[in-house]
Each structure stands twice: as structure tokens, then as C-alpha cells.
Amino acid sequence: MSISLFGRSLLTLLDFSPEEIQYLLELSKKVKNEAKNNNVFRRFEGKTLALLFEKRSTRTRCAFETAFGEEGGHPVFLSTTDIQLGAKESLEDTARVLGRMFSAIQYRGFKQETAEILAEYSQVPVYNGLTDLYHPTQALADFLTLEENFGNVKGLKLVYAGDGRNNVARSLMVISAKLGTHFTVITPDELNPDEVLLKKIAPLAEKTGAVITITSDINAVKDADAVYTDVWISMGEEDKRDERIRLLSPYQVNQKMMDKTGKSGSIFLHCLPAVKGEEVTADVIDGPQSKAWDQAENRKHTIKAVMLATLTKC
Ligand code: CP
Ligand code: NVA
Image (cartoon, rainbow, N blue to C red):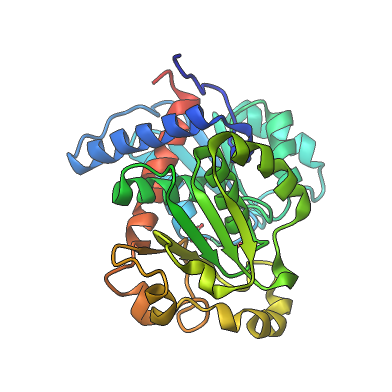
């Protein structure tokens, strides 16, 4: 079966079949290999990309901007202080106008609904560069990193320790269920992933054999092939700082936790930015088990693959 994602948006990986996700990962490997061999083409020549940011970013912005620009495309960075995004004119009208001028739109911000409205009214591909609910381009880079380290992701055990209800944990849960990776969330009961998502995930996981586990017991890290964490306080939640530190301190990823996997080949993952000394200790993230820097690089290759698949007949 030949796969085409031409014209599609990436709002959440829930919208993509396991075959489509695998296709994006294979394309990412091809793109990465091209980059390593200094093969840069002009595949986005004549195309434009609006980069809409309501929240800060280093990796996501740089990945979109360099991946698109180095292949002849014209990316335009627009923060909320530059444009009307639901202020003065409706979001729908802004989306209609952007759709007349841009080949695609990247949106990073608060509401998933904003990404959905942008896609509906612009009629061009919209890429979710992080919302409060999902971070799908991150999950693609994470799974490319897992494939690079372990070959196949099916049957691997991925453990996420930290805020179980945030965008990164949710996206990892979706991609794990789709690709048959066993996914364990270690989090205090107060921060359990929401029931609505768990209900959506259950039939997907059943199909692929992925076992999804939610627990507050840090011993569940045993046998993990990869241990993942993210910041305890996501963007927009700064007022929850004291509560999060109190709840999540027992879940810090440190060498003791890494050793609890019982596997010498287990790796450490982090989407970055990291607050060293909070969710992870410096010796772990800067140590030999850490693949966080490969993950960061892989943001660019996977994002280029998503844009190639949706904007060109590659
Ligand atoms: N991982 C990630 O999305 O990083 P930025 O916030 O720097 O884009
Ligand atoms: N959960 C984090 C991810 C940052 C890439 C946040 O939303 O701030």
C-alpha cells in the first residue's frame, strides 16, 4: 500500500495510522542520512511557512526554520506581539488570510482548539508545535531516537517519570499505543493522565499489543529500555510551582532510578529544556546513558520529514 500524506495537517498523532507514523519515521531516517552526507536539496523552493508562537521555543522554532529555509523555503516567524491571533480579529479570519499567503502554518500555543481552527479555516497543512494537550513532532523525534538505539520499537519498555498529564506524556502515550511500545507512566495519583485520553488509547493499544501502565510506584522502572522525563512545570503553569515540587520530588530521575531498570543498555530521554536538579540530575542527563542531544537533533530531521510528506509529492 503506498502512503501519501500530501495536504495533511499534524495536529495530534491520534489522526495518523501506525503505517503513516512508520512512514514518517522512515522518511526522517532518509532525510537525516541526506543531511549527514551534505545533500541539501531545494524541495521547499517557492513555498512559505508561517511560524506562529504564543509560547517560547528554542528547538521547535529552530528545527522548523532551518529545515524549511535550507531547502529554499521562506519561513516567517510571528509571535503574538506581531500579529492578531484572536485579538482584534477572529482566529477564523486570521486563518483564512494566512491560508492565502502561506503554504503551511506551524502553531505553538495554549489551546489544541486553536490549532484545529487554524487548520479548518486556512485550508493549508497546520503543524502542532506544542499545545497544552499534545506535542506530536516531539514524539516523532523521540521514537526516531528509540529506533536508532534499539532497531524496532515494538515490545520495548518506555517509562515516563514525572507529570503524567502533560503534553509530552500524552503524546508519548499515543505513539506508544500506535506502534506497540509498552508505556509506563510513573506519576503521583494527582497527576494521572486524563481518563478521556486513556479511553481513546485502550483500543489502539489492544490492537498493537502495547501495555499501558499508570502507577505511582517508582519500582515500575524495572526492565525499562528507556527512561523519559520532562519539566515538572510546563509553560503556562508557573503558578503551580510549589505544588509540583512537592508532588514530583520523589519521582526525580537520578542515577539510582536509572540503576533500578536493571538493564545496562537502558537510555535516558528528555525533550528539553531541562531543569537540572529538579526532574533530572546533571549526572544522568550529561552522562553516558543520555540520548537527549540526539533527540534534540532529531527534531529537525523529523520536522523536515513531516513537511516533505505533507507539502511535496515526495
Ligand atoms: N522540546 C521542545 O519543544 O523544545 P523547545 O521548547 O525549545 O521548542
Ligand atoms: N511540557 C513542556 C514541554 C516543553 C517542550 C511544556 O509544555 O512546557
